[in-house]
Length: 273
Image 1 (cartoon, rainbow, N blue to C red):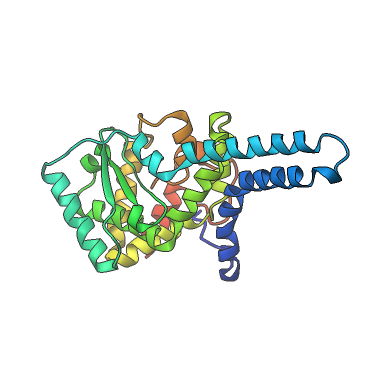
Image 2: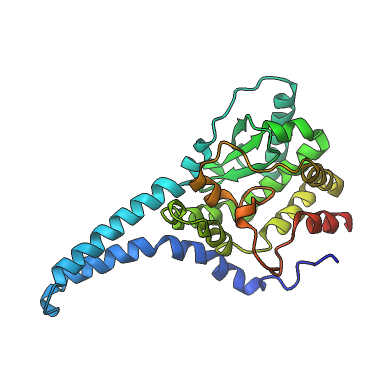
């Protein structure tokens, strides 16, 4: 039975929900500030105030640097080796992308084509001017022009809605954690609104005004059954799992969450439009 987007995050709670990833990313800085405060107020602490402050200071700096090093969306975009394509499919891709960006008034993102059999796509960046659209050759191979337009429109909708920026804060917040546990993927997902993918589907459809395009693309990708790029490192897999067009297995919730639809349910919802 098809689940719907209800109950979704109430509109008045959306800004607060989106700030969760930013608060999480700021935790190492808070630890750093606590260290500074302990050192500055060491006279008020009878024993070990300076030592404790220095410990907090070092932990805060190291944590921040590691988070930024591993979780930066710019770094994640370059984890995947891109290939230089000049064939007809690449020209078709650029024509679609340029047209949709002009119509929607957003800057043209950088494009990275990854030589991988997996069929998937993701957009990474802090804002639209620093955004990078990553697509696999597997996606270009299985999708026709109409399907590809639906996929790109979905990613453009993610940029316009601010989902990409929220994901950037979430990956930075979990950068260090991604080295040690697969729970990082679940944590990144929990910092983002569960209905973001389905709402980006709806946003993409409103851009193309043709629901079957994205519907057929999702159905085609589902039939291929391969969505994880093999070039992803373990850390990058955990950090980006929740942001691919088709979420990677690591980010899948263990139980049903309102607003978080499976690919079959997303297809079913598009079929009702």
